[in-house]
Image (tube, rainbow, N blue to C red):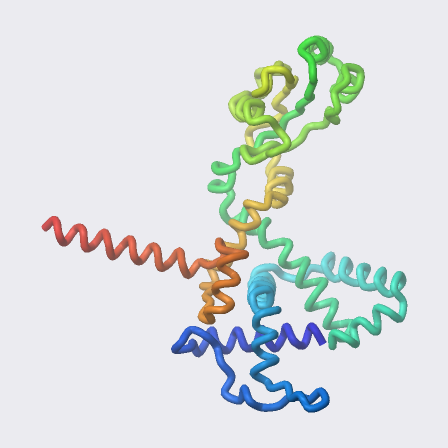
Length: 308
């Protein structure tokens, strides 16, 4: 039932997007039509629509739009089909008849669930990666990924001892354990947005090179230290790893969504949905960005004319 409701909302959303509304609020021509009764209480199509719009409208608009874009941009692969089938087999094995009943309750067949839920979600998950690939130089300039090995220490003596051992060829994992570091000793991808790294250490990582070898740096508190080695700062030499790390960043995922919505001219006409999306997903409202660009162009033209 929930799936049917969301589909109805999505259909209404598409309809009002194409036709528009003079008062910026979508309405039904047959809103007084009674759908069902409970005792003496009638429930009209308009009442149900209002409830659906407030409850499911914003999420349905975002979900259906994102699914549409993903299906246009990301081809379905054999790996996706296999993964989706393995997932549904796992659900059936674990939940048994309860899963079958769940599909009946939401009005979906097993094939629909595979295609519209499981495969669609796998396609959507690939959009940030494709966004990076299409805008690689811009993204790299913005996030500056570096591959480095970093060991954190709570005392300078431990950091100095570790640095000496590492310069003599010690294994980073063993050195970390021996000198009370909680770091794994494994290389990781760091960006200017990496919150797991002290701000000063992050700046040091972005300015160092492979030729520096192992070196020590003090954190911003002046009481903790990091021993660092840059493994690679030419992103072309670890491109796949960099992309895998970048797609996990929430800020990049938001940028990706905004990018695809702009490409497909995502536009909301209904004020109720617009206000909800503006509250929860402001970066997705690319129509506002277009309006701002037009306003700036108009203002610039007016200013140029006034100076003539």
